[in-house]
Amino acid sequence: MTQLITEDSNDQLLNLRVIEGIPYLRFLGIRFDLTGEDLTVRIPPNKHFIGNPDIPALHGGVTASLLEITAKVDLCLKRLALGSKDDRKPVSPKEIVLPKTISFSVDYLRGGKPSDAYAQAKINRMGRRYASVQVEAWQEDRTRLFAQGTGHFLLV
Image (cartoon, rainbow, N blue to C red; front, side, top):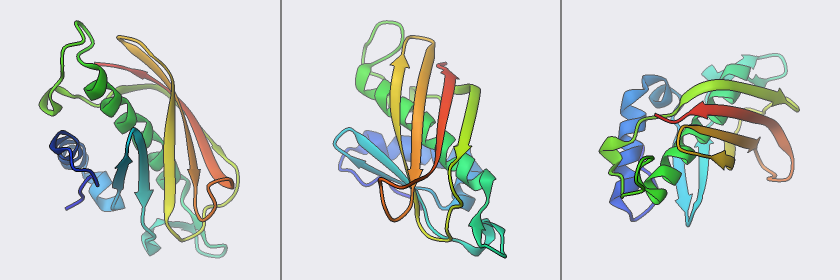
């Protein structure tokens, strides 16, 4: 079972809800690491994730999934920290629902290698109903991105 690496049980409950609600994330083996307020999402290497075995390169769908789920979970954690969208009262993990994607674009900067892939999100704007997020993905070197994404989400 995937576990959020934190001492806060609210974050662990969110992780379970996210993973259990999306079987594809279990298949990807997604791991969440929350250090302070920084969420890092990791996908471990898997031979089934190689899109082009001649290179070999990480499949674009796996890369896009990493970017999008990073944005969505980061928004959920921010909502937990800020409170409910209506009155800013504390929100329990059971009340959190993944944001709905309005649009999401991915820039594939270079081929992903068959090794651990990491992503972090930066929330540009988060209102009561809408959020704009940028996400970066890297492998060995944090400064050498292999993909980045921009997403717009409906907060429900």
